[in-house]
Amino acid sequence: MSKFFGTPDGVTVGQLFENRRELHDANVHRPTQPGISGTKAEGADSIVLSGGYADDKDRGDYIIYTGHGGRAPNGTRLVRDQSPDAPGNAGLATSMALGLPVRVVRKHTKSSPFAPPSGYRYSGLYLVTQTWMDKGRDGFQIVRFRLERIDEQPPLEPQSANIPDPEYSSTIVSRRIRDSQLSRQIKQLYDFQCQVCETQIPTVNGHSYAEGAHVRPLGRPHVGRDNWSNILCMCPNHHTQFDLGGMVLTDQMEVVETRKMTAIAELTFRKSHFLDITNVQYHRHLWISEEQGDSSAQKLYRA
Image 1: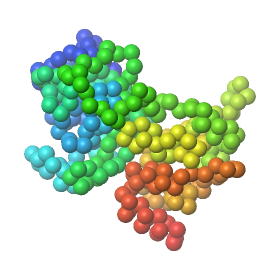
Image 2: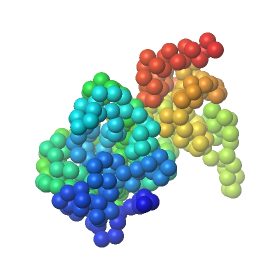
Image 3: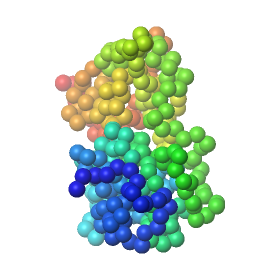
């Protein structure tokens, strides 16, 4: 059965469900066991926040969600690294790349003030805005996703009015917000040419199009800065590839295809623009472990 993206007919945001079977029957979350409904080919259409992973963070309007895999059978702790190629994880990455909405269901748990008092609650539609690799509390690599709630939906109703959220600021920064003043300055500096491929995209009105790519992502948990030393001018294709971990930068500013660790280009720079090397390393280590990335880079330069 093909995936359906959006809120099913007859279902309302905030609606309660007694169990996974009811979620399945209402087409809110069809799998009766997995927490992610999705495949690489189609994308992920729904997830369940169950409190099953210690690394999850539920802030209501945004979620830091741990992918699936890596557990022992019938266990709760991770015993091996997770893989971004696991079906559900790859599905969420596809949803991010295509901008597909994801239904979020919250299960009753004491770890989240937004969880229902019992059973399950449909919390509405979210967009996957970031994904990266990280070391989890159990010491293994985990796949992490940031999901942000789509505007113009009924508000969430937390169980507690006192919600501890030291990480949340009044401004939610997402990948959809691309065009800050500093970003525009960088694009103008490069005459809207991609720093990777030097492509310039003309538009019908005589202007050119490019995107400002933040090296260290903005927003929690990355807290990258919106300044020149954290912004690149990129074409849409290379921006997406960079955001999804398809390519990383070496400390020498060479562009490397992540899976093959093959150099594909050297970044071009103009005038006084430079990147903070710590931002470059931070982005690289989102996709490649520190030891793996450094040794691979050394092998690359010896080749």
